[in-house]
Length: 463
Image (cartoon, rainbow, N blue to C red; front, top):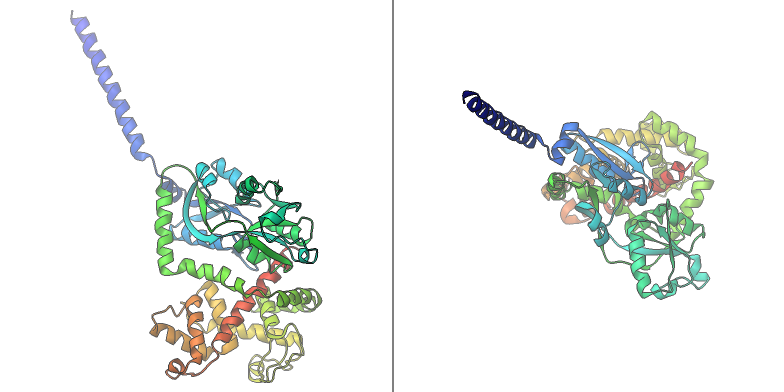
């Protein structure tokens, strides 16, 4: 009897202890499970699948650049982790890796569509675009340039596989069966735009921001018509809990409110409105006929004064169109259009000597950069220095003073470029130290240099 009782008691005790152990370890496991956001913080790394393209990510003259890359870099810095990139060449590849659960975020200029929302989790929207039908201008001469969907019959239209364009065209085909499009694997939108330019295909579809950038590289391309309504771009997030998504929404809202996103959007997209077909065509010709003569001098001067050589070359084109003998009625001369006083200060003996002028201009722009306070950072600093080269340091300080009075940011080019044009209005300049200035000129000056620099970079990065 005692043995039976002891057996029952020990069995019950064993059962209770086993149950307690299971509950305890289950609870411990539960409380140690980390959210997606916590896991990123723990590994101290944000893993991103990113598309190599002018609107997303690319290697600039001296560093990595791209609107989406800059946003991701800001976010990684704000949460205190490193940014680890897996670079892909097509949207198709980016989506393939996303489906496999690779990385934490996919950034590939992806528009949010109903079809994609079935398969992926999207983060906050950060930009808006429209899809456009892009064709070659010569089709006007051939009298087959499409004006609407009905004109697409018989044309060779190719878009990338797995892109939003494929979804758009397939829906169009339901109403316009005479239109037959091809869906190519392994080709980026940029490659397809180049194929249109080379007349290898008739047309392709592109997001409006992608076309605006590439039209400067291929000025013979033209937008035929819009094929979609406005669409939002967003990043794909790994499926799981909403911790990363929630944090990204809070972060992007803060950045919108503080102007950080607008500042980046302004830097990467504001100059696109500058496009002028004739000017761009002439520039492309001079890239071949004039720039090669001076590339070595631009690179050496830029290295000496720690300036991107492409920026220096673009500035020189804006100043003189790479004409070493250029003269102005105001007295400026040479490749970098130096005044006599500035030339003497920079040690330039002959302003019409191309090499001396390039070195003098580089030295001067480096000097101007150093004269701005440390609060002017990064891309803003370059823009400030270029503007000062054009309008003078005194007027730039006046613009900063006026910005403070107007509760604008005196260290942000986005704000300063709205203030500079006011320096030509008496009610503003009469209260400032250096008085009247044609303030719109430095704004156009900086915008033009950004435009030319981007085209030069595209040309030389392909070599």
